[in-house]
Length: 195
Length: 250
Image (tube, rainbow over all chains, first blue to last red; front, side, top):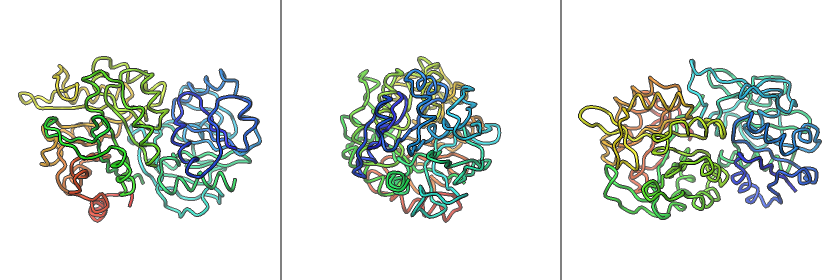
């Protein structure tokens, strides 16, 4: 069973619809018990970083998510929250990836980064099995994770940034797989079946 | 590199898609959910749903429609019409929408943009702006184009940018439904004055109109009747744009 974390500003329905298509058992929850009982966890993301971190503290999930040993997929803001800190609201995040989320420079490029962009692979990852390099994914982000040693793919928008990250049981994608057509469905399928 | 987006717009009244000329003379174009599914499979990059009656009838928008749409498509979509509270926004995003478009409510309460952006992120907040020339001045209209305001077009676009909107959906009421092309002159002024993406809306009648708009720097082009009545296939349009040097997702 997969637990889809609902923290009040996340787009849970869209991810849930993909899980339904894949005939995958899941619950949408913000309770510790459902996270402890899950085989895998999806941490979706729409929202503002400091608001969501506050929410996680209030729900008593912050430490649990840091320490969990089950496969966990952070999507968009969910990926950024896996990092040390975010400049969005200057907030300390879960600290899995030792890197700080930065804001795109709006004097150089339009912010948010909004629309379909291509990714380049940096490392092999099960998440991308069956997906050709150069595939387009849907992004909607004003903040980005700088390229680092845990990047499995890189996207370019003014500068190169991390489009996906991986370390131990933690996976993150900056784009929205649930909104990226067939290729995005494949990512979620790979997470469910292979990670 | 990021691609330019093609966005079919579905003006919705009671679950049905309608389309008018210059914001009046409505004509039915089919079920919103069925059209949405068709556009997803035809390669649309994104969809916009505008509940055109909501603002006038003070009706809360379309959580149910959003739920049905998000069951059948796997691309992003925006919903608008009568949204005036953070709780409305939360309900729509939770039901599967990616963005909400705010129009009349932000004219009355501009700080709603900032509050919503703080809570949901700028990327989820689209400022929908309807502009019409009145005595040579671009004026902002609200309530589905029925009410003129004191606001001037370009300065309102800059203002929503400052207040942290994530995108501007700029509709020319003068061009809407006329198929004479987008209002390039005004779009160019806006694109050069703001730091957020701009969606051109109102007036698309043929492939070249999209190309012209992308050439002046808009990020996405929106059209309705052209797609609804199958006058133009999204795939053909994208192939044409690509062969003319515009990056699109094919």
